[in-house]
Figure 1: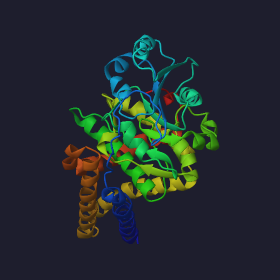
Figure 2: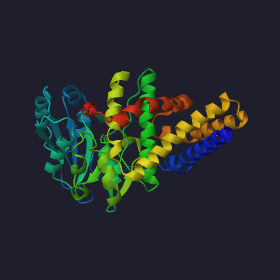
Figure 3: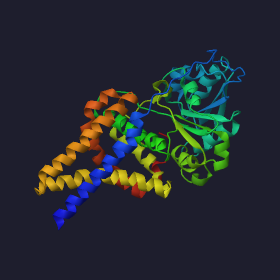
Figure 4: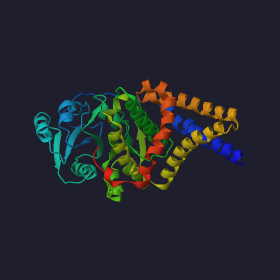
Length: 379
């Protein structure tokens, strides 16, 4: 009896995994990489434009003097024609304001908003930036991020038409030596794989605030961040989770529309970052939580029950076949997606990284259940 239960559970978990990887993630693997058409005039200055919507680029910054000094030219020199840039300095006590004031004298389309509200997290600072934005199309990122190209704004806005109110972008992490960096980059790719694939499947549930665009009208109709203002985080995933059903959601896969940032360098810092992110999961809609739980539990049970079948020598060949079939699909689909997400170097590590996700789930499960508010702060 127990043998039959273990075998049935392994088959069911493997079948669910194969369904997700072939029919859900497979949509992303087959999705074409969009082309970016150049604007007639490649000028970073803010003229009027009749062929494209005006865009308010909102950048949140908290003590980012160094990044603003080094990388801000990647924002002000975007080729998109009709653009204003708003930098919201949130509870900053460094020299960020002086750095931006110097830049503002050179770039008339740059505006500075100081928000010293003493609140943890950037949600209220971002809301203040949206409130003062002049245009209907909002593009969001953080000051520690770097656009992959000067066509980033152009590419993201190209994904927004009259029927598309939200555009989900990709925000990978920079490559660096060491096992932590490999796992951090893979986990970020796996997260992107989920929210992009489910959006293509007609079930968008989240986005990342480092590269996200939506219309102000949708923000106002949804009530902004009021439904989850008791949480410091969630300005990106919880907003998309609440608003996605109200407007069509598009995705952008062109590498020139990616936004890169530096990953955490220690396991402790990474743990704090992820516990902060996980704290919003309990606020997702029930259907979203069910789908994500099904994906996670099937992954866990596939490895755990298969391991029991091998340990107790129950259908050893069947267990090995199940492992081989699933891993073959993961390698085939995952390699294509990792290439599209500009992380080809991770493809050979897929079997190891996919297995390490099991440990990742187990380590962070207590944080998800406890939902510790102490983690609710800026990265």
